[in-house]
Structures are given as structure tokens and as C-alpha cells.
Image 1 (spheres, helix red, strand yellow):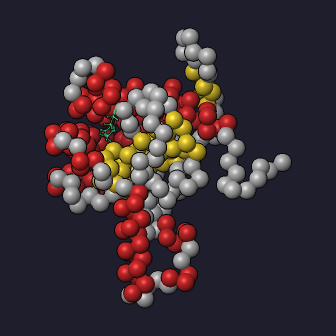
Image 2 (cartoon, helix red, strand yellow):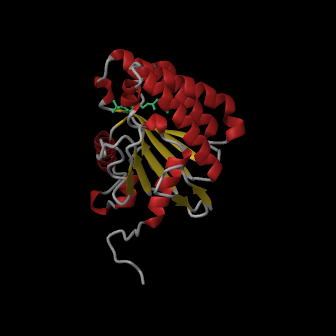
Image 3 (tube, protein in one colour):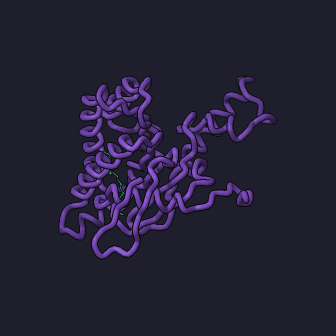
Length: 252
Ligand code: FPP
């Protein structure tokens, strides 16, 4: 049992770390606003956001979370200024180089959701290398969504399924939800139980559209670079107070 109480804070977050959700997904939002508030370039916000990601991913591993998925770069983020896109790619490269150096110690399994082919070649190679080295690891699985969009993922899955049908490997009359899930980038990963969005925005922004069907949502005004272990506890505590019925009724 963990207990956090900040000075002058009325709400107390009490998260039972023996009853964690299996899979937490996070939309790492608010980096730009965090930087603007400090008179810094947006890229400084992303650098601070990358630090927060390190802290939270490490903590998730420590508390024994099974799966953490983060939205790092969407299919729509290419519309941002080249300098900003380049800075995010640079931060990812830096992170992966560090992760590779510590993999044997951390035993975190790393996966990537999204079409990696438009990414800089060096970054693609690092993603491939991290995936390869860590594929046998049994610690927390961290999925980084890169050039990811929920609609793009569904279209690609539909294309792959149609191709399998044409080749006689699949039958459209016998398609189940479970079988279709295996065509997604997230194949084999259970759906997220809890989706967290910091920064006060109340939308899904094309994130895990299929997988979030029955996820519990947690929103907070805190900007991602300020997101902390205490915030994570608050989110988990809120999740633990929910009654998940999956379309059914509460059991007596
Ligand atoms: C959204 O905030 C954030 C992004 C589009 C980029 C997220 C990237 C990182 C946290 C850094 C790299 C990640 C890793 C895994 C090392 P925003 O820029 O839309 O913020 P705003 O809404 O305040 O402008």
C-alpha cells in the first residue's frame, strides 16, 4: 500500500500497488505549454517530457506493472515544424542508445507501435536493435508509439487481413475480434486498462482506438513534464475506485 499526501492538498491518492492494472497507456501531452510557461522553446518541453518518461517508465518497472504504452509521435505530428520533429527524433535516439546500454540490467522488453519506415534510418535501426535484444525479457513491456495513429493501424490491419483472405489464409466469415487484434501493431498485448492524459485535454487523439474500447480514462491538468510518481499513484487510485462492467452489470 502506498500513500501520498501533498501539503495543502485536499485529495489524497491512495493506490494499492498489489492490485495494479495490467496495462497503462499514456498520452504524453503538454510539453509545448510547459516550455511556453517558462519562456523556453518547445523543444525544451520535449526534452523535459523525455525525462519524465524515463522516470515514469523506470517506476512502472519497479512497481511491477506488466505493460506501459506511451504516445511519443503520432501520424499527424509530421505537420509540426521540422526543427521540432527533428528534436523529438533526437530525443528518441538518445533514449534508445541509453536503453540499449542498460538493457541487460533493466530487462525491460521494448516494442514499437506504428509504421517506422518514414523515421530516420538510424532511429529505425535503433528501434530494431532494442526490440531484438529485449524480445526474451520478461520485465515490464514498454511500447513506444512512433508514427502511430489508431486509424492508420486499423487500415493496415484491414489490408493485411484482406490480403490473407485473398491468399486463402483467412476467412472473412470467421473473423473474430480476437483474431482481428492479431493484425494490429499491438498483437499479443492485452488492451490497456487505464489510459492517462495529462495537460487537461479531454480527447483520445487517434490513440489506441481499437484497444481502448473498455479502458478507464484518467485526465489531469498537470502537464506531462510535471507528471510525477504521485500523479501516477493518483491515476491508479482513481482507476481502483472505478467499477468496470464491460457492458454488463455490477456483480453483487
Ligand atoms: C505532445 O505534447 C508531445 C509530443 C507530440 C511528443 C512527445 C515526445 C516526448 C515526450 C519526447 C520523446 C519521447 C521518448 C519516449 C524519449 P505537445 O507538444 O502537443 O504539447 P502542447 O499541447 O502543450 O503543445
